[in-house]
Image (cartoon, rainbow over all chains, first blue to last red):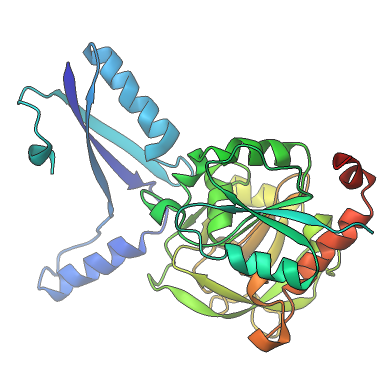
Length: 93
Length: 241
């Protein structure tokens, strides 16, 4: 069956995030004076096939460990759900 | 002394490959470009991972390049003690491949920085730096947007304790200061080597400072170090027989 994993890749706490600092400064300039911190990251939506939830979850864990996050400075977390809608390239675009 | 032979790896998006080949040519060396899908290095004396944007630097710098077919042979070459240098994007790839510790992140000021940079040699040893003296200052170009060397404190302390931080960003006086640091690298680190010293990763570009007409020749000394080191290695000559 088909699955969709939404993988969030974030910098580890304590790793400087100049992009996040700049965005925070932009939000404060916009009038949101209460913004204390912004941490930037990546969202990757992955559509793939696996037989069951355990296999699917293991696959995502391996993807994160081998490629999607660099453990030196990043951590990954993900949400996994069965993809029940008909396959369409456009839908994923 | 036999002519050094280098293999220069080319990934889709690499841009400093021909500069390395040019300098090798000026020195009378043999240089071969090696497309990233190749799996046989062809017994070179040294391997170069040049600068650029391998595979577009998508996901992270060097992250996809690490899985290019050529990298298994490059890793085996380094594991056998072969001299391997990664400059700029090449340094990023070496870190992603786990051949050097740490990672290179977005410059702290978020700008791409293209400039001449003073560096202090922290240790002159191994194939790439044998002709340089600890404490001397050299000037090389930098050209990168993601050069902020980052590692955990334990790794940084271990690198320093084992003399593996070989180049640091400095002022023209040799002082390590925040102003001299072009990207926010931890402890001003510009270049490191592996535990055996045969793998060098550095953000600056020695190949762009190897002729007077481009503004400096300090980079040439890294090539000359290699030539001298190879001449002292009977194994390098034997590999070709």
